[in-house]
Each structure stands twice: as structure tokens, then as C-alpha cells.
Length: 220
Length: 117
Image 1: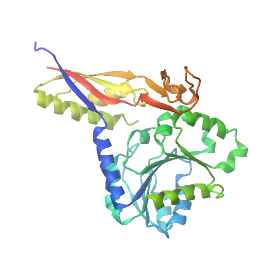
Image 2 (image 1 turned 30 degrees about the horizontal axis):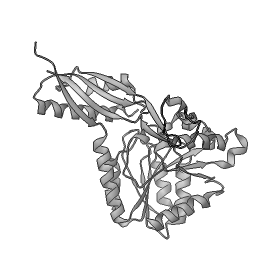
Image 3 (image 1 turned 30 degrees about the vertical axis):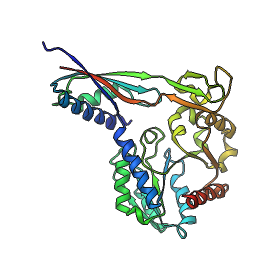
Image 4 (image 1 turned 60 degrees about the vertical axis):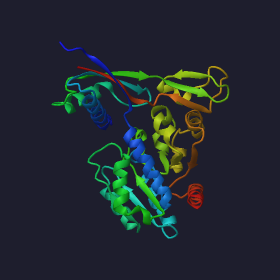
């Protein structure tokens, strides 16, 4: 019998994706195209928030959307009706986007011609957290009905996102969601995380998020 | 849930190393995977068995070392291990701080070595 050899490999499994994401981010910075990777559970209000946000920015910034949610032909139509260009990525039931898929979407749009692009990532709080998409900022949405304990269940998502939007605050009175408990969890996981409390439905609190994004675009 | 693309990456990497090392059968592959990842070891082996059919890696066993989550307290500098389910509810065992920690380990996705003949 042949001898068994031990061969050192020492390679990061996600090295290819991380490198491609880094290169994509550099290109986006060069083109001055600000890309937001939007992540949440299904039903947290990604599309509603996106539509409200687009309506503010579409006249001042060339805006587009990359749709990746598995079941989002409906979403794509809504985005088109909002008057901005969108591409639908065929994720084939994939649970997340990686930087290669995002690059395909950006190329299909001709991303260098846009100032602001939103990626509507696949709706779940697990897989999208593991893959760098190459976006400039990661923004996650948590809606009030999901509960204030989610950072304990999905710590990676809460530690890799730059911004947390707490949506559906109009439902706070109906639930035992405690924003201070949520903030305590986040202080441990990601103390630099920017937090906005809003209701995309009533518009309450939207200003804080919009102003933040305006500043980001101005400084970019 | 994303075991499949991760497993594909592992297979591509080990096959490349098998070729450069001129080996014809991979027996085992040792991985360091951070506790914070949601990868299920059993599923990874299932997917690996499926994907590796007909390659030099067919039949190889995945040896997965789970690497604990370690935080560093930026207040007092102490490092400490923490269970995944408690990571958002932790306090520093040194100074009781409840915020401002840096993650030192727990997110690894690393192929360490393989045994082959």
C-alpha cells in the first residue's frame, strides 16, 4: 500500500469571492457608483422601503435596482413601475448572492452610468451574511414583528452589516418588542452599527435614513 | 444552507493541490470552520460525496475543526471565548463591559491540509 502524505493547503475557502468583491468595490469607487446591499428576512419590508427611498432619490441621482429575491417577479414589476431601471438576477433558488452574481447584474445595468444602485438580496438572515457582494455598504432591515432577540439568533448578519433599519415601528404598540434590548445586543456585536427606527408605511422616521444616505452620496 | 457553494470551492481547491502534488487519491481534508458560520458538517460531507464522484477526492473524509468564537474587550484588553447563542448577550469576564468587543476568531473558512496517496 502506498504511503499517505500530508499536504499543506492553507487556503481561505472564500478567498476567490473576497478578492473579486474587493476588486468590484474598487471599480465602483472609481466610477462613483454607490451600491447598497439590502438584506432582510422575507416580509421585513425590503421592497416597500426601497420604493419609498427610490422616490426620493430618482430625480437627483441616476438610480437602479438589482433584484435577487427568489420569488420577486412581483417586486421587479413594482420597481419598474417606480420608474427606475432594474435587472432581475436568475439566482435559481440560491440562498444568497456572491460577488460574481452581483457583477453580472452590474454589467447588465451598465453600472458606470448610475450614481446609486440597490441590491435586493435574497430574503434570509443567514447565507447573505457570509458572502461579500462587493457593495459599498451592507444595510439590513429588521421589522418589529420579528422580535428584539434576532441578534442572538443571527449574530453574523448583525456583525457584518453597517446599517440596521428597524422597520414597522408603527407596530410597536402591538408588540413586546423592546428597542433597548435590541440595542444592548448590538452594542456587543457591532458597536459602530448605524441604527434607524422607521416605518416605511407611515413615513415616520424615514427622514433620518434619507438624510444619512444623502450625506453618504455627497461624501462618496 | 450555503453548504453547496462552499463545498464546491473546497473540491476545486483540493483537486488543484492534488494535481500539483502529483497524488491520485485524497483520503481526508482538514478544515477550520468558525463557530459563527452556519455550516452543517453532515450536509457538507453529503454534498462533498456527491460532488467528488469521479474525481481524485472521491471518498475523502472531511475533518472539520470547529474554531471557537473569541472576543477581545476593547476596554480592558482581555480576550475570552463565547458561545454563539450568547454572543449578543455577553459581558467581559475581566471588567464586565457590555459593549465594544472585537471578534478575534470565529469566522474562519479555512482549508488547512489534506492526506493523500
